[in-house]
Image 1 (tube, rainbow, N blue to C red):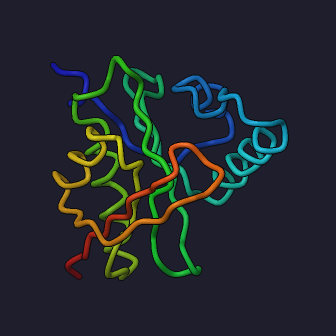
Image 2 (image 1 turned 90 degrees about the vertical axis):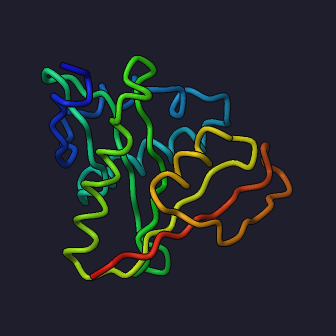
Image 3 (image 1 turned 135 degrees about the vertical axis):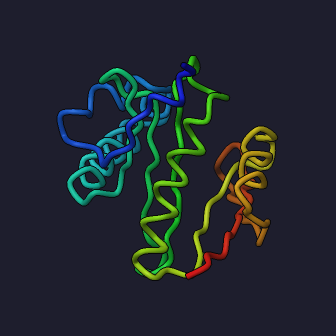
Length: 156
């Protein structure tokens, strides 16, 4: 059995917080204390508001998808993170499919997502899920400074 076939996809619980933080360096980067504090508070709020979906294998969290709504009505994937040992096993795709089905059931007609221009793996991932590039923005004091945006229209 492959790692991805035994996955359980659910909403995140507050008790999952320590495992979420360990998945990657998103919460350990060297940004200033205000950004670090804001990230952790945002994570707590997202868990409380059921905006984080997790993948579990044998009871352990192997990945998560964090979403929010742009302008309060367009679903936007903020992050998809998968433990290194579970990357390329279908975990990210299963997280997305769970999220996509929820958005279709809620009658949304599109999902937006983004990635850094240099992240070729993420760009291929988005395209494999049916996303189309729809724009970008540049930030003056942020590295990398070009973020590509993707849109996937949903069939309701």
